[in-house]
Image (cartoon, rainbow, N blue to C red):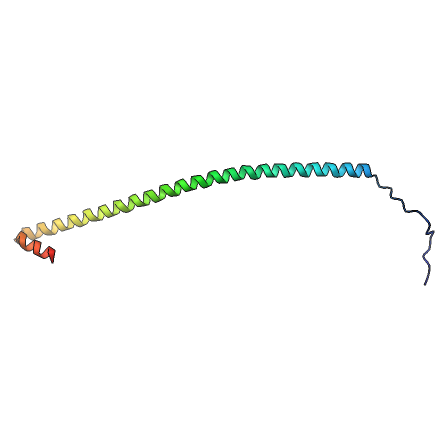
Length: 110
């Protein structure tokens, strides 16, 4: 097996500047911490906004439900009024045709 060339007794020295590397990493760490705190603040603001929006949505949904109930009641009242008017018209037509009130009542009661 061939031997590697070169002097194997050389010392391997690391000529890296640790101080500047640490300073760089510390600055990066500070920036990341600031980003995290800003993100957390934004999340809290969005949570508050979400809570307000949900509250508004609930109140609008309640108002819609109330309006739907009122509409249903108004429609039912209108239907009763229309039925009453139709019945009164039919009774008047029968009276005009000479049918007695007793006969009309018997027809209504079936």
